Image 1 (tube, helix red, strand yellow):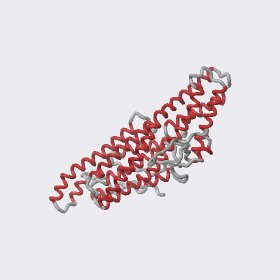
Image 2: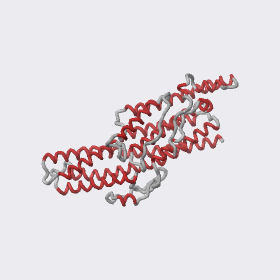
Image 3: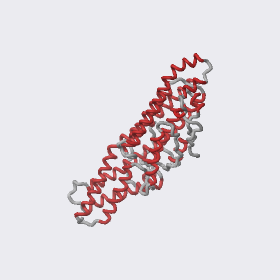
Image 4: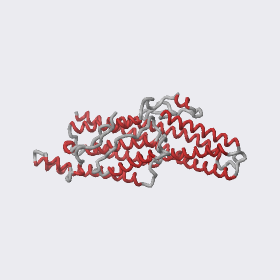
Amino acid sequence: MPTADFQGSSAPFASTGRSFLSLRRDHAADPMDAHHRHHIDAGEQRELDAFQHQVADLFHDLAGGGDEILSISWVRRLLDTFLVCQEEFRVILFGHRRPPALMDRLVSDFFERAVKALDVCNAVRDGVDQLRQWRKHLEIVIVALGPHNRELGEGQLRRAKKALGDLVILMLDEKDSGSVLSQRNRSFGRHSGSSSSSSGGRRSHFRSLSWSVSRSWSASRQLQAIGNNIAAPRGHEVVETAGLAVPVFTMNLVLLFVMWALVAAIPCQDRGLQIHFSVPRSYLWAASITSLHERIVEESKKKDRKNSIGLLKEIHQIEKCVHHLIDLIDTVQVPMAEEKEVEVRQGVQELAQVCEAMKEGLDPLERLVREVFLRIVRSRTEGLDCLNGVE
C-alpha cells in the first residue's frame, strides 16, 4: 500500500495573509447575504482558530513536558491529548453549518481512517496485557532476591533464574512473531471476560490462543492505510467548506501521529514505523508534532533500540535489568561474595522500580486506550447519522 502524501498544493489558511472566511465572502453573489454571513462566520472563525491554537498548545506541552518521552506517563498524556482534540473537533463538526458534498466526503474519509485506528487500539491493548505478563515474572524475581531475604541461597537464585529465563523466552517470541498475546479474542466494543492464565510463558501456550486481530494483520500496513492520501486542503476546499476542511485535516494528522506513536511504544504485531509524515510548516501545531516524530524516529535508530519490541521507556529498562541480572546470576557462586551480593541486590532494586512504574501505569493506560476506542466509535456513529440526516 503506498505511503501517505501530506504535501498540499496550496498553503493552508494561516499562510494566505487573510482568513479563509474572508475568501468565502469574496465569492458571495449577494452583498447583503455576505454581510449576514459576516456576523455568523466571525464566531465560527474564532472557534476554528481557537481549535488550531489548542492543538498547538497541547502538542507543545507534550514535546516539552516533564514526563520523559515514550514513558508510560507520557503515552498517557498523549492519549489524553487525543481525547481533548477529538472532543473539540466533534463540537466544531456538529455545531457548525453543513456545507454540501465536499465536506461530506472529507468527513467520511476521516471516519474511515478512524475505523482503521480501532484495530490499532485493540492491538495496543493486547500489547499492554503482554507487559502485565512480563510483570508477573519480574515479581517472582523480586520476591526471590528481594531485601526481605537476608541471605541469597541457591534456591532463591534458581527461582529467579527460571523466571528471568521464561521472561526472555516471551521477549524473544515477541520479536520473532511480532506479537505475543495472552488474551482470548476480544474487542473494546464487546464485554471482555477474565484473562486466561499463564502456563509458564512457553511459546506454544501463547501461540495457541486466538488474537484480537488476525494473524495476518500488520500494524505497519494499518498505519499506512490510516495515512494514505492525507493532504492539506487547497484554497478552494477551505472556501467551499467554510473553513471546516482545516480542522478535518488537523484531526487526520493528529489521529495518524497518535496511532503511530502507540505502535512505536507498545509491542504490536508487525510493528513498523516507516510512514511518510510531513506537515506544512504554516500550521501552528506543525513544529511540535514534527519534533516529536523526529525524536521518536531517532530513538528507534539507537543501537540498543533497533531490535526492541517497543520503544516504551519501561521496556528498555526491563531489557537492561533482565540481561544484567542474568549475567550476574550466571557468574555468582554460593555462598555469594559480599561484593556480588550488593551488585545483585542493586539490580533487583532497579527492577523493582520499573516493575512498580508498570504496576501503577498500565491499568490507567489501558483505560485510556479503551476510551479512545469508544470515543472514535461514538463520534463515527454521530457523524454518519449527521451525514444521513443531511442527505
